[in-house]
Image 1 (cartoon, rainbow over the protein chains, first blue to last red):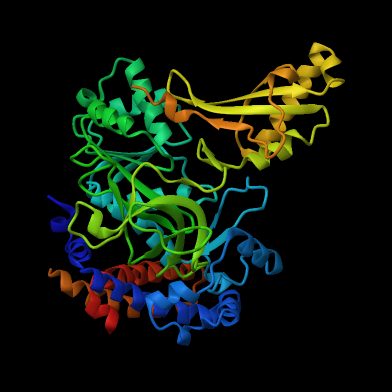
Image 2 (spheres, rainbow over the protein chains, first blue to last red):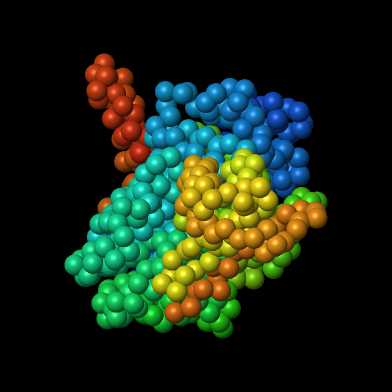
Length: 463
Length: 56
């Protein structure tokens, strides 16, 4: 049964005209702006400074034209001035029931989000909704391959989402090896749903191949593979669907969106004519603008731009016109293959505007690695490569050259030095990297902006 | 049960949950806050699917 028939609520969302959907957004936005003007000194000051107090915002269009944007650095400055949550918290501190933090590897610091009990449910809902649309139903057996818990929305949202979806969930991410997960899946047998990062689904598929297990035979009840977080070639998506014999579905989400902002429909990640599918946006929960990052003008359908997010119902630490730094191809609802009036993003091509890399679930900026490596005077230069190994795992190789004097030291001293650098990188990024010493001449000279990293993971997505 | 009865039931539950939150039992207070938050979120996410409720 389609999700629209299975849920009258989802059916109503699907039946909204574009005009009704925007009326709904406008209704919720007015409520959110009025609340924040009253309860958040951070937003009140910014609104007043920009001449964008709630009484000046007379339409969605006006909101997009005059309301100020916020960025990570704005939030960090607010948190520093008013620790720990900043003045954007907008709920009483004693009503914060869950704390989320973004990855701290940008070198700038970590954004802190204080969520209310209401928000915990909405975070779960913004995971359960895309999974419901993708076929997950109460009573289904689900495997969550994303590490659970911790301080991230990605750690708590899936657990809450599967719980309120009514699924029987195995949260195996981060706590079991891939082989142990496969053993568990074989014992369970009737698994219906898997949630994983793009790269981890590849790792899992490779491992099954290696063990001679055909997923189609081993898991005949599998209905949905749901991925997030990383881009992929369309050919890979086709191979994954053929291998597993079920649909590959995708979602786009973030801490700032308090879960998923949108997801694929029945069509999945590939359209019937073999093109990339669409991530249909849940626009009544989050407003997503896609703009040219330099002019801030909305891009046209089919063009790539930066996503700007506004939360319409989140109470604690909501974002209003937050510049995500994530770039996506915007697809107007009239250009999708669906009847729904929800605008969309193109599947499989969302990327960072800056040089951030998502590695094993960690947001890693090269600047953070540079800071760790070049804290050692003995290091002259390095070059890094992220790639997918033959057995489907994400590997990181760093080729590092020592300074002329350090290169003269004994083998033991040099190995100790490399181990110290490796430890410093792990401390800053949460990721272990393999370091190989090479002569200085093997590495390039950077005369302008250093580009030390290559991400070759997609080249390795071969099944 | 008709889908359109859900909102009325949830609104009634919300009133009851607000009353529970007045408890003097410190162990239960956080649990009642949690219950109230859940009901509030359900009301919120349901009204998004019903323009009439939003306008009310």
